[in-house]
Image 1 (spheres, rainbow, N blue to C red):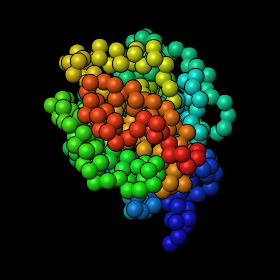
Image 2: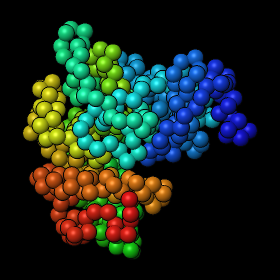
Image 3: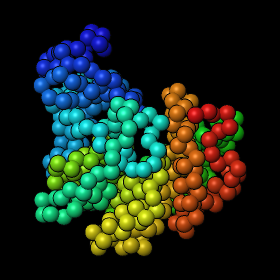
Length: 361
């Protein structure tokens, strides 16, 4: 059976045979999304053909729902064919509620699910939670993150530890960015130096708290749902790469978004709200963990834009490169990032820290 026939059969089986399917902009993965109009209820079809897998997405969605958070409700799923019908949470992404420029691929239900090309949503009208407290999308995103981190994580989450984080960063830096910039493979001793530096910088995370880590908890994956209450006002998307790691990682993703700037006052307020709600966390240790996670994430992601441009023919992601390298430069100034800063100075001249000259967005 062809892919088109499999999708048609799946939709017909669940009452969407005559629904109008509108493609939504594809993001950094190979999954495809279709917004369905005219079926039993508004829905989004996730098309994730093998070797893509949807089982992890389904398990994490069930976990988030079980702990009282807003993941898309699963209407139907075929794990073998990689098809999922899920609740359409709409287009009120936190990224569309900001005053910064939208993604090159538009806003939408997620970075992979773009809204129509209309203007950005207006600033939200302050609403109230059940107890009359004013609701704010960014404050609620922090409250949701705290609820997510405090809940017992699923037992089968992979580790997002020093080793996993090091290998992820080495992959984008040395296998993609380095040859694109220097036009030759990375030397073995450079690979060894970067591996040792990343391991040294990230090793202290092992002694800190561990929790569910979304790994991409940023504004483009969070939807404002003001009709709901408390932490459920934040819809959470694209959580299939979740892991067990340090709680600072997701806060970095939120307040140091590689895709758009967050005003300094808002970022400061967001971090202060997080720490005020978590008195069990030592602020100094957390700031060090935050800096290490930031240096790692920005290095990995800055080089990931090159991989997306070259391997996946998506050069539009290079538009985020200058911002990501700027965030990395700031992170490297913290003492917790000293091992990585030193090896960067040894191997990568400041003038070359950016998109490769022959990569065009």
